[in-house]
Length: 215
Length: 215
Image (tube, rainbow over all chains, first blue to last red; front, top):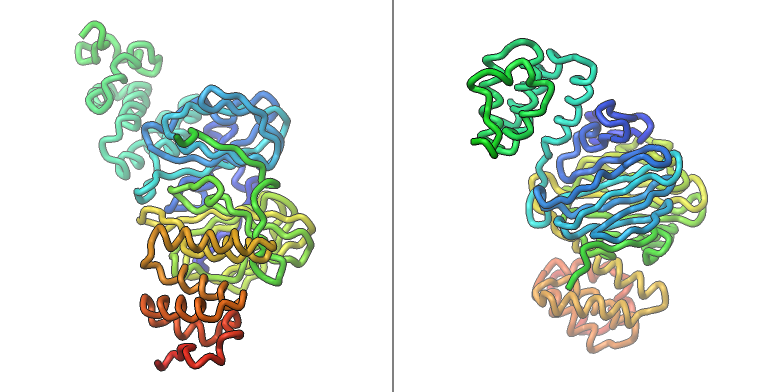
């Protein structure tokens, strides 16, 4: 980042995050604080915009097909979106997703919530954790999650993933403690934990959370 | 009922000529009525045409991200020159001087913006840009309607009265021009200083009722 009041980069330079093959973390790379902005890139068939809604964030979202072409599904409607297509989803509850229909497709996304100052969403950091798990780099995952929790104290997603890393590292007491805190923040993690292989080493412990149906 | 989403191609966005340097505003935010962040495109048909006007965001204090979506541009940022092919991202913090011209025909630059720590509000410049854009496109009545609607929404905004006075002066409506200008100055005395240097008022400047900054 330049001290001169500006930064120049490119979609290619930022490149793939490594976390998810298709994510180009523009906001994070440039440390933009006023609005959310990312890009997603991939070849024919790649699921660039995963099926989701913005109900939790309340965001309006803008999608711009910068290169290639995609097939969007928004609020149950399907349509083709060649280069130059701009899709604006104003209803946060509207389900939306997009798949690349040509190699080298790139979709730029921008979002924020009307009437509120933009705040960085923790999912960006969380997304960088998954490849570390896939590579077995649990200590590094733990380190990054602790940094993330310092910035977002009590975030249930980070706590859950921290528990997983600690369980893999054999730090069972810490894992159980953080798992309990994650479930307290988001009770659905109790059910998720029942099948999560990262937690196998502590699943038989009496303090392991009970699935909601059996609670 | 407002649709959950809308779709447009950047080729189908309205074209509002902004200046004599070829800058053409392609209003994205205004097209969709985006309320959460600023979004616009600027295009130039010919190399050498302006695609980002010289400015510093010293009034709006917006962080701005420019994305070269088509063609190629040459940015001037904080006195540095930047070659910007497709895919280039130029992120500029408020207070930093920036501008860009097309380096190739058919260049299009997307601009996203917002103010850190503040809920987004649409910039006031969009209204006169649209009004004068329609006027330059040979649709002065449509431009006038944009300004009249702005007055209806908020009669206390002096700029809309001021620009309606400009339209009146340009169209030979002397009395109406002077009345509207007087009203704009009632709302914002600084408007007299702007009017003194505004060529739109040349046709009525000799009128004894024309205000002077001193009066």
